[in-house]
Amino acid sequence: MERVVCLAAGYAFGLIQTGYLYGKIVHKDIRRYGSGNSGTTNALRVLGKKAGVIVFLGDFAKAIILCLLVKLFYGKTQPDMAPLLMLYGGLGVVLGHNYPFYLKFKGGKGIAATAGVIITMDWRITLVCLAAFIISVAATRIVSIGSLLVVTIFLGMWVGLGLAGLLPLAGEYLAESYAVVLLFAAMAYWRHRANIVRLAHGTENRFGSKK
Image (cartoon, rainbow, N blue to C red; front, side, top):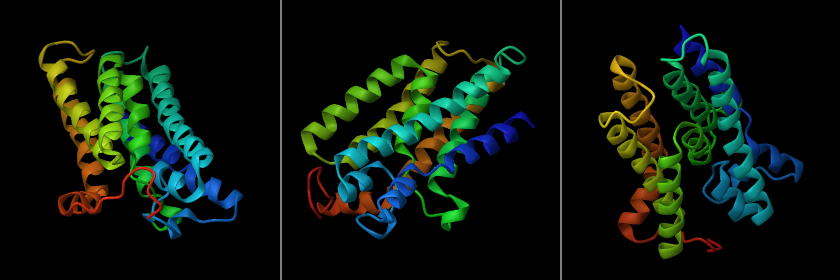
C-alpha cells in the first residue's frame, strides 16, 4: 500500500508541468514547437535561456520536494523501507511529468525530475552524474547524450553501491530498488527513442542550434 501511495503522490507532483505553465504565461504552448515536449531542453530552445532555467528548476524541485516529504513521512515509522519509498515517489513524479493526463499524456522526458530524485538519494551518484553530464554536453553539445548518460550512471552506480553494501537498504528492499531504478532508465530511453535514432543517423540537434 505504501508503494501505491508514494507513486500516486509522486504522479500528482509530476502533474505540475513547469514548461507548459510557463508557456501559458507567455501565451505559447511549447509542445507545439521544437521537439514537441514540455521539458527543459525544448523550453530553452523555444522560449530562451530564462525559460530553460525556470523550467529546469521547477521540474527538478518538484521531485526533490516529493522525495523529502516521503522521507519525512516514513523515515521514522519505516526507516528500513523509506529509501525505497522515496524511489517509488520519485518514479511517480517522472510518470506524472512524462504522461500528464490533463495534457493528453504529452509531457516531458523526465530528466530534470530524475536529477531531483538522484540528488535526494545519494551524493556520490549525484557528483558522478553531474560531471558526466557537463563533460559530455561540453564535448558534444548534444543534451540527449548527457541525459542518457545520467540515467545509465544512476542505474549502474545504484546497483554497484548496493552490491557493495553502501546503500541504506538491505535484503528484499535492496533488490526491489534495483528494479525501480531500472524503470527510471527504461523510461528515459523510451522517451528519448527519437533522439537515439537521430544520434544513430548523425542528425541529432546540438546545443545552441536553432533547428
